Length: 190
Image 1 (spheres, rainbow, N blue to C red):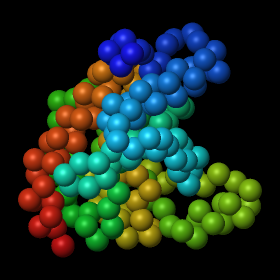
Image 2 (cartoon, helix red, strand yellow):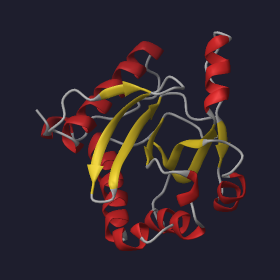
Image 3 (cartoon, rainbow, N blue to C red):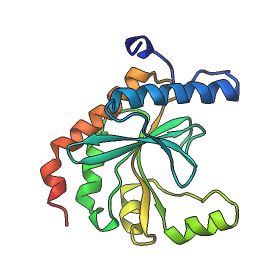
């Protein structure tokens, strides 16, 4: 069945909200089974309420998130390929490596979401979904990295309005591969 879902579109104009969400979840399950077949099932829900799964690579574990309605000013639907890192590792060189890895790929934005544990707990205690603090440029990411405890997300946002499963998988695997090629540069970071 895997090859039959190669051309499964992640979004189809005019579908009901229910079918649109079901379409995206079917695509997420297909991507998960292709990109991390050894771990089944491995879906989780993020602190902010997004469906995600892990993908191992040479440099560590990536997280792929489903953003059915986009992410603030990043129009949706979209997928996020995120590489969690400690804030002190977020040097200009590290951010440049991710930026270089996506050069020439359309519908991709390098971004980060800054958080701290207190904000998340306060939101939960107020029966609210935690707010996201979106940072969209390399300079903004580096300038603001010490304004929170951690980046909930750091990586790329892929707008999937016209993407199918195979295209989305190939884009994400290409970025992961390019990052793995820079493994030595990444492990030299403080």
